[in-house]
Length: 264
Image 1 (cartoon, rainbow, N blue to C red):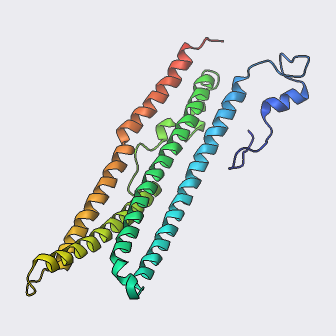
Image 2 (image 1 turned 180 degrees about the horizontal axis):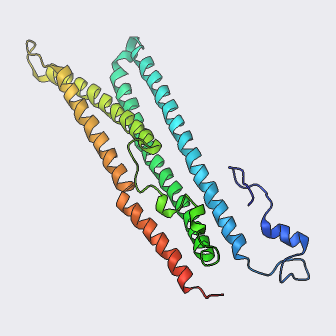
Image 3 (image 1 turned 120 degrees about the vertical axis):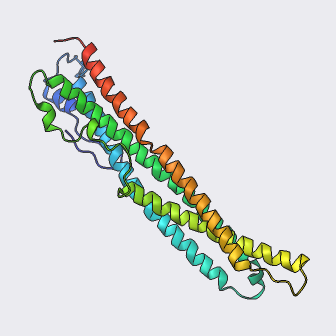
């Protein structure tokens, strides 16, 4: 079958176009157009499209992860530059730092959701390719026994969940930890500044509050809240039971289609 370049659209040779040029198509009209509907060509085009979208999902995942790490590095450099500012701008340093960390945390959530969406898009493409494989297996099984043994990657071999060592798990966990650290840093600076203003406003001069331990506790709470929320979303979005149910439905659809189709 023809091979596509990753970036669509690009012209390429299709089987039905080659047949038409050679004049071997059935039902060829006077104007040179093939008036028949060829199911095999349609299935090949569908398989090729699913293959391309699966490849693009993996490529986009790598690009998104690299872009996120780059943006985190830029924001970290900006945060370091803010704390090195002097003069009258030093009074605004905590506010700018809180703003940058909060933006980095929100950006991490956006990238985290996007990475999960790309993984779901890849799985949909893999299921689509698996359904076409199962259709061909069901069609050719009566004619050639054991044809199913030639396909190692089928619907039943698709992973039902993301293992802890998988690439998707590692990438999403990294983004979740970095985003949670950003929220924790913003909470640490915000609580420390708030306690300092509170003590200055209402407490006597001899009264002191351990701002650092309290700020660390607030940062820990913010980190756990953000990380656990992202982890719960990961498990819910990539639920193994739902994905297994989707595979079963795809297999039943192919089997029922083959059963109800007229025998030749």
